[in-house]
Image 1 (cartoon, helix red, strand yellow):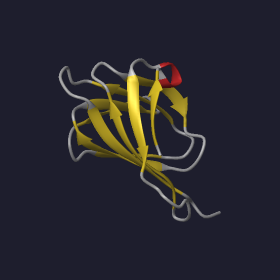
Image 2 (cartoon, one colour):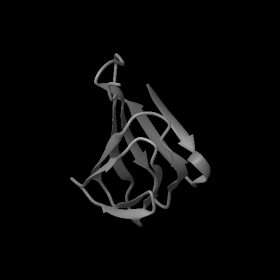
Image 3 (cartoon, helix red, strand yellow):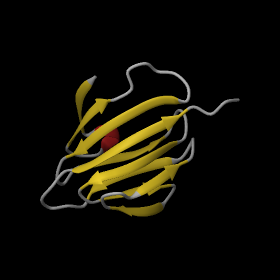
Image 4 (cartoon, helix red, strand yellow):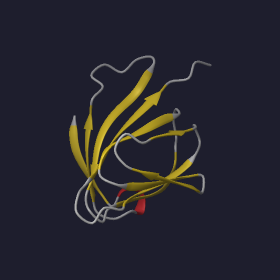
Length: 108
């Protein structure tokens, strides 16, 4: 599935999203390829389901997780525990911030 979201969670600009997960099932609940335009941001929001990792593919960005800022460049990776509050900013003046989100189901 391929779609665009504008001003996501009160941010600004457009993020292009491709869902890479064909059949949902354990251990993954989502795998998303995302491209946030130059000057774009995604506003603060609480993770409603599953912990996740975010891997920067290209560009530069900042991800704030529970008030801790992580600078991201190609091959950077951050972990976001379930229930965390997160926001994201493309800090490049010339290229999109491209990243992959992988959400993993946690057995209860």
